[in-house]
Each structure stands twice: as structure tokens, then as C-alpha cells.
Image 1: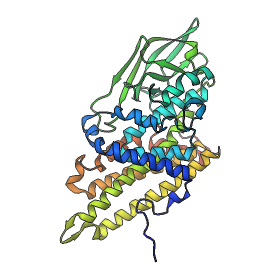
Image 2: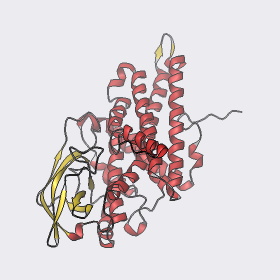
Image 3: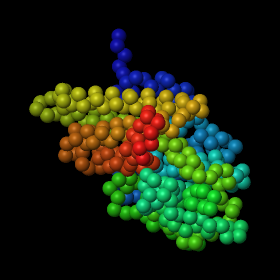
Image 4: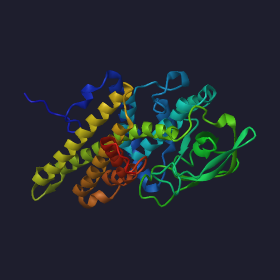
Length: 389
């Protein structure tokens, strides 16, 4: 007798997970179903980040999930972190962005590049959601060229004085600290800057049509003075911020899978119930071809990210592999979200359905932390040995 397959997991990728990984996915999935989905459409409409969910996100161990328990974190493996991102983005890309920035772009550099004193001071509070971070790398003129950094930090006695600006900073107006990357006389260095420091200003970006349930900000530094103890001592140069971005991009390869699954589930239900010309929309060949193509692309993305996670946990993951998965999976998800919006017809343009919200959010996800073109060129450089940037 044929076994019915899960339409959102045709290759039974879940069977390749450990019991602990499945438990993580189920726990976050329940949180998304019960606490996120009932409110997230309204949050998107209102342009409001649901910060009331942060204590629950923290209590589930989702912030800095892969950092050791010594620092108040969950000590999970990379695949579990990927599944967290997948389930959170099934709710909304803005929620996954919050967790990605807190975990991969703020807690990770403190853990990887910070002093033991910095780790013990910040990481337990950040894991508990008591201290929120933001990551200051991108600048108004810089975009995909972070080496063209204008923000600078100059030594003045035992202090550093920071001047400059950062743009498109997730969590900027929520944050208690900013991980700020600045040019120094000894290359690019990172600093932990409390956001209540004199001369620091965060200005929220409005009029967004994407990531509306997320806080996006511009940061300004006007003679911001911090002690040398605020500097991340164990890294210099672009490899510092780029190492953080590799961690975050890894999670981003998983997140869009959740968004695509949410869209597919929605249209599977809709086309089964929508009657046109006397029969369900799902009985139409054109619809079935589109649904089949979505399932094919989701399955490919699932297998890409799972293998990437296994490579990460084995200490073998390479940045080019992350670029390939980020490129493929973001393109997969945005195409599926747009197609689902189309299948929903006129109903698809309202946030009563999720497809338009996911499609709009994915316009940001496919752009940030390396545009699609940049990741294509990273793979091209790997194949040819020639840098075309």
C-alpha cells in the first residue's frame, strides 16, 4: 500500500534529522503556530515588530543557540539553528531577521572575537533577551563593498573615538548595544558600543514595503567615545565582519524554506476549496504543474541546507557553499511566493493571506547579506579562480 507523502517534505528530509533536531523544530513550530501566526499579519500592516515575543523566543533557547552552555546559551548544533531559522521564517522573515542578527551578527562576534570578560558580561544577558544587539557594517554608500568603509575609530589615550554612519541596520532602534566595525590605523576593527553612549543616534527607517514587522535603522556616530575594553581584541581586518556574515547567511539559507513552505501550504488549502467552473482549482493541470514545481524547488533547497548544516557541524563548511545555498534558496522562495500570490488571485494582494507578505519580505532577504548577483559571482570566482568583482 502506498504511503502518503508530506506535501511540504516530499523526500522525508525530517527522517534525516536526529531526535534532538526534530524536537527543536517541533518546539519552534508550535511557538510559530500559536504565538506568531495569529498576530503577524497585523504587525506587518502596522509596521510593528512584535517585541512582546522576545522573552518567549529567549526562553526557548533560540538566541545564540549554538554558543556553549557556559555562556548561558543552548549549545545546539548548526542544523538545529538552521531549523530554528526555517520555522521562524515560516512565521515571518522579520522575526527570523531579529534572531539572526542577535545570534549570528552580535553574539557570535563576541563569542568568536571577544575577550573572556566580554563573553561572560554580555552573552548570558543576550541569550536571555535582556540585552538586544545590532550589527553596524553596511554604510549608505557601501552596500556590497564593505572594504570601502568610511566609519573610523581613532585612539585617544586609552579610549577610541568613533565617527561615521551605518545604514539598513536591523534592530537598530531596539538595541542596547551595537557591534560596530570601523577603520582604524591598524585595519578594520570591531567595537561593542552601548547605544546610550553620548554621540550615538539611531533613526528608524520608515516607508518600507518589506520587512515591515522588523525594525530597520540608520546609525550615526558623532565623536562616540568608548574604552579600549569595548574593542573586540581577537580579530582585525574584513575577516571579522565577513566571518559573522557567513554565520548569518548560513541561517538565511534555511529561513526562506520556511517562507516557501508557508506559501505552498496556503495555496494547497486554497486550491482544494476554491471552486471554479464546477470543480476545485486544484484539479486544473496548470495549477498542478505550478504546485509540483514548487515542491521540486523546496525539496532541492531542503537538501542543500541540510548538507550545508552537516558540513558546518563537521567543521568543513566553506563560504562558497553558503553563497550557493543562499542564492538558490532565496531565489526559490521569492519565485514561489510570487507564484502563490498569483494563484490566490485578487485575494492574494491582502495580508489576510501570507503570500504577499512573504513575497515582499523576500525582496529584502534576497538582497541583504550579499545580493543574488554577488553570490553568483562568489561561485563564479570559485569555479574559475578569477575575481570578477
